Length: 455
Image (cartoon, rainbow, N blue to C red; front, side, top):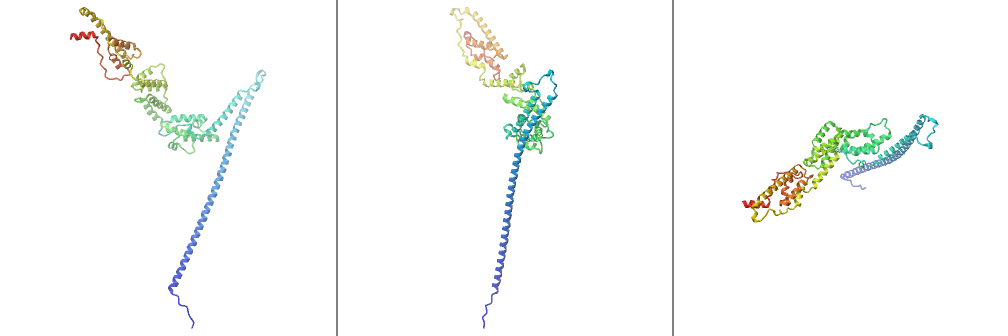
């Protein structure tokens, strides 16, 4: 009887089929991931190759552009040379044409000996020199790397320095002979050289403006003339209203606590702004407004300036006011105070009327007459001193008051400051206050003794 294999359980067959299916799914997923990785690698490689090709093409185009730029520069230099030669030939042809039309010299006169130049030749030479100089100036203008080294003022919307910026910019344009790009309309037709220099001028204008103002005036395809007019309209727009406001401020401006330098500087700036708006302020009007706005410290200088013949200019008036301001600052004390400080009172000399004890009754009338005369002289001297100080001639005529006062004080032993008190109060450099009382009339010593004896 033959042997047979044992039967396989049904559960083992199911697990084997499941494991086979799992392995198949894993292999399929692995194949798909490998395919995706290969595709990604191929795509990245293609992108890298495309970028490399683009880089090589860009470098080639850059090299080609540099070659074109070098060729254009060479053509520009050749064109400048050809233009110079053409101008020279034109000058020679014009000279030849002028010589052909010139009348024959009478009397068989020969042409100028030694090849002397005619006026036409000189004019042609000057034109040739001017053309060469213009080309050189334009080349220098193109070579300017930073315009702010020449135009130091940066124009802002809210700033008041438009006149200064305009002056500096016109100066640099005149230096390179480029004023026509902002003062005149573009020529027709526009030459390549003019278009190139117009771009230079426009770049200068934009470089000297702030970013906010540059955004306001910038326009696509505009010329330097258009940019210049846009800046002018920004600062000179509404000219009538701005003129009215600025002129009112100019007419009512006073010095107050300002120094002479600041006061004159602000008035001059207002006058310049009005001139830029079309309202011309003459030098005489400016000086009159300076005099009108002075404070009380400089009122006497204003009076002298008004009466000066000839009438002073603004610079002369400013110099006089600054000199007076320096004098006031350096003056430490008034002349009367200095004189009182340097003068020491001396004792009164002994009276010559003192006699013996038995002659007192016979000398009284003579003493009384001398005392009355002395009092009259003293009162008249004080009145002259008061009038001299009141009329303001103390500086010009000091002898009438100071010399008499010093002599009287020395003789009578009276303090000089008491006699000079009215003059010190009336002096123009002394601060005003309540008027001090007059010093009492001094009494001679022998009269003081008599009055004490009577009391």
